[in-house]
Amino acid sequence: MMAIVLRVGGRLLSSRAGLAVVLCALLWGWHVYDKRQAINAAREGFVRQFELTAAQTELETLRRRMAAAEEANRVLQEKVQVAEGEALRFAAELEVFERETEINPDGVVDSGLLGRLRSN
Image 1 (cartoon, rainbow, N blue to C red):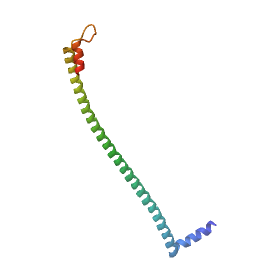
Image 2 (spheres, rainbow, N blue to C red):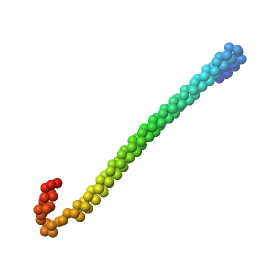
Image 3 (cartoon, helix red, strand yellow):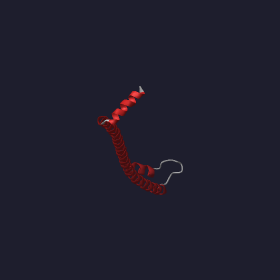
């Protein structure tokens, strides 16, 4: 059987038509291989581009979140400063009130304090 295949294969390669058939088969095989390589390269390129776009979008989203957090932090710091200023003013006002207000040692409200309480 092997001798028949070699004999037919030898005749095929020795004739012009057989050589053309073998050459076409080799070219077709190379074409299929090259097409697969091109498809794989294109697929990898598309995947890389998609991953890059996704990473850029995520980075942009994180930048926007950071900017919003910084703005919220700035607003909060301003409110803290305002609250601290009001607390200092209230403490000073309370000290003045304590110095100017006489307290009855018996814990009884006298008429002067009662009048001031009613006027407020």
